[in-house]
Image 1 (spheres, one colour):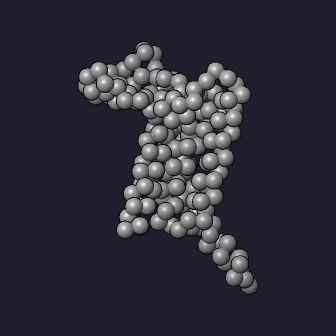
Image 2 (spheres, rainbow, N blue to C red):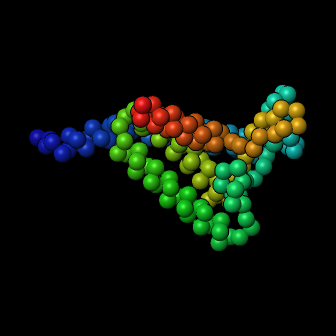
Image 3 (cartoon, one colour):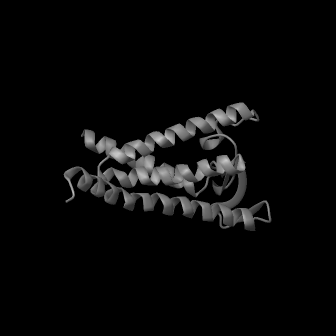
Length: 163
């Protein structure tokens, strides 16, 4: 006979497995996009249209190139701290309600994509260049899009819940 604790554990695992699949889908979508760019990028810049270029830039810092450094010690320290933050977000994901799990899944999937690159390539390949005439936004990647969407959703929901 299944006791109540075992039943709760099965429900907990079942509820989270769907969101873990979302995390993996986002992670692999990001990996695929980066592998495609790295394997097929033969020119410096591909002009897609008047507003979007593909321009491979290696980011050794955090968002928007902040904390970029040639120091291995600082790079490793920042990478370690990013890993701790991802684990913290994953813990919050596990204890959050189902409606918030999607948002945390989106953030975690993107963060794992960039974290993987930091560990494997010692930098994150960014390649999407949005621009208007001579104004160029920061170059970013698919993982950055998911992280940004997730954080924006958290902010919006936070405002809506407080009103």
